[in-house]
Length: 148
Image (cartoon, rainbow, N blue to C red; front, side, top):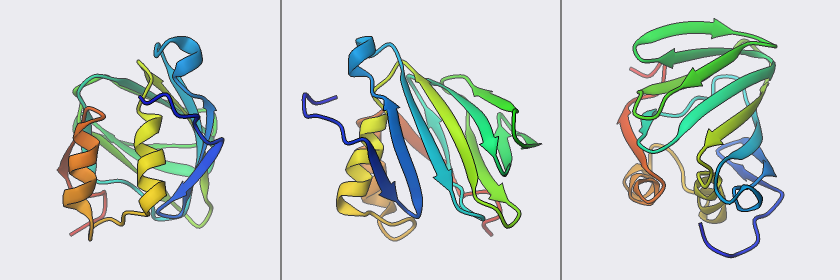
């Protein structure tokens, strides 16, 4: 992570990311952000090679794919993804989903800041997104849920 000051929130691909606890105050031990994801949204399948990721669903319904198993989760549910585990999610229904995400160790929030700065688009800019993502220990492994 760079020494530049993190913005309080960024928008990318129709999702708002509120950076609640960037990694710097915790000496990179963790970072916490809130996301508001629109219906139908979900990232391509991917792996974080250095971070565990914990999602807490605040509102909406979200289908998670973690380690090959698909689970529908709603408000109050938690999905834990260990580092190295393939995963993705998709917002289902007609309501946006609000989630709190904890990354341990922290630093991944910088990926969203970089993506929002240049407004890269999936799938058009996926090679560039993947190249930047590799600097944040991110590897894409397949399409989003529901993609043909």
